[in-house]
Image 1 (cartoon, rainbow, N blue to C red):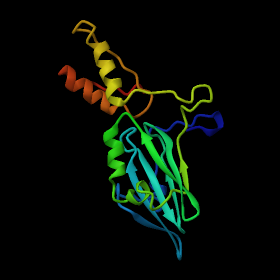
Image 2 (cartoon, rainbow, N blue to C red):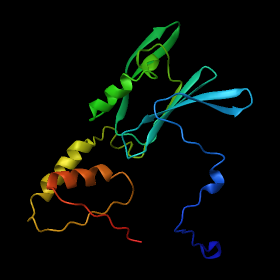
Image 3 (tube, helix red, strand yellow):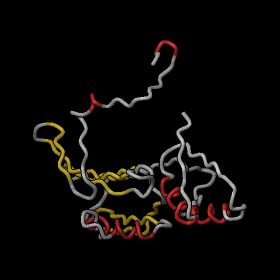
Image 4 (cartoon, helix red, strand yellow):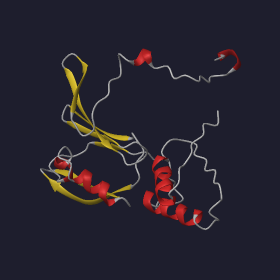
Length: 193
């Protein structure tokens, strides 16, 4: 590293200094976290169906509930609103290509009070990377549809063709596994650095 010259690259990841601050928590298990003496919140992680390891956070405390989605594959719409005990209650429907994932959320014991309308989310934070004012109804294919399309294109080439598929970030692991299985071949990954 050379901060004076603006070089901020490090080949090794150094996180040891964070070991006392960070601790892993399990998926789908409400976990109490003490923010300060006498002040705790409950945090539950849910699979976000994005890239391996991506999660959504349900944070509950002081009678409030916040859902932070991070990156998810989907769009959210309010499907119904009604009055309950003189306050508006909104039912949130997440419509996704991967309906199995939506069903897993709806049936999750931790989320049932929210999906049944007994409790409400006070705030929902969505990742809006691809939200644009010019195309608010932009539709993305499901993972399965994207992999199917890639496979159909690859199968259009001679069998001895070598493909170099660049991925600029994590999240393509499902694609590589599907290609390997469908084509009956090994898939190699190369670190360009």
